[in-house]
Image (cartoon, rainbow, N blue to C red; front, side, top):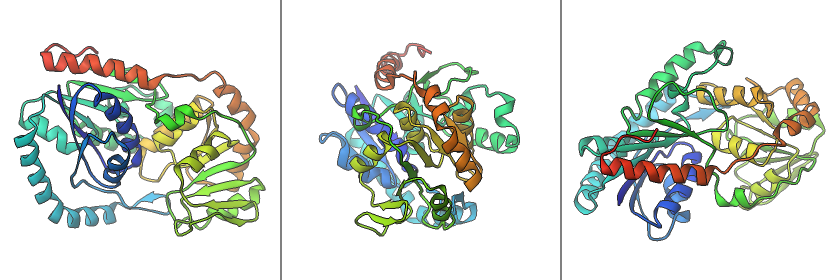
Amino acid sequence: MKILYGVVGEGMGHAMRSRVVLDALSAQHDLQVVVSGRAHAYLSQRASEHLTVNRIWGCTLVYEDNELRKWRTVVQNVKGALTGLPKNARTYFEVTERFAPDVVISDFESWSYLFGQRHDLPVISIDNMQIINRCTHDPDLLAGVEGDFRLTNAVVKGKIPGAFHYHITTFFYPPLRKPHTSLHPPILRPEILAAQPEPGSHLLVYQTSTSNSALPEILKRSGRACRIYGLRRDITEDVADGNLLYRPFSEAGFIDDLRTAAGVVASAGFTLMGEAVYLRRPMLAVPIKGQFEQMLNGRYLEKLGYGLTADELSEERLGQFIERIPNFERSLADYKQDGNRHLLAALEQTLNAAVAGKPSPG
């Protein structure tokens, strides 16, 4: 079977998830991959060597002080489109001429979806975002953010409309409200599956915004040892500052600090949250402002008793999180999953049904 697989480049979680799926599919099928942004370098380096990974242009988001900057995002994408769209057109004709796929899989990526629509091919969706649109959420979870929900729901609904089937990865399970949809535990990279949780005393802190100047003082006053990634991207070795240890990014080092952490303090991105839950590490989630999906992730995390969420990190909220870590550990103690096998088995059924012209299995 020939599969065109599209991966959105905004947010590395899509690339990490897709790497696992691509490696599994490439053992049985012929694949071409299209990917934008930083995800291209990640997949080019880590995916199976016989995969062709094509770089395309895709929209990006601009963040500052843990907030999505909408106007700067618009300006940056308008500039990028001037050179990016002609390149995408060239890639379109190259894929059409040399590959001729039977089916398309999209991880929240529009180029591959539009290719499938143009060539009347079945499109299969794999991502975590569609849970916003295709499930029913309790009003209590949406309290105070109803407007954000309606806007984000409309965007997600319009991203990959009319797909043959939607495979949604998640650690929380709201009721389905639409057909051709199935929920699956998070897909985890092999390094996480191999990690053995050993709770320690430090907090793992992951911060994507280098301009968050208030964070270090809040962490210092907690008195807890903190291993911090992302806040100082200029360093090449560990830098100690009292109870704070700034670390240059290392995938192996990060995973080791995650598996041995007493707790995790980070934004509410789905991938790290799913990894923390799998390793049974409590999490204090601070959603990026303007990112409804992260707000929803954080609220479900708190509802399940796996951690806390906070609109802004404060000394008080951090103290509450640290005090309740034993309670969160008890809630997480029985968490188990086999998301990779669960999704890959279901995906193979979906692929066979799509190519054979049979109804979606969900």
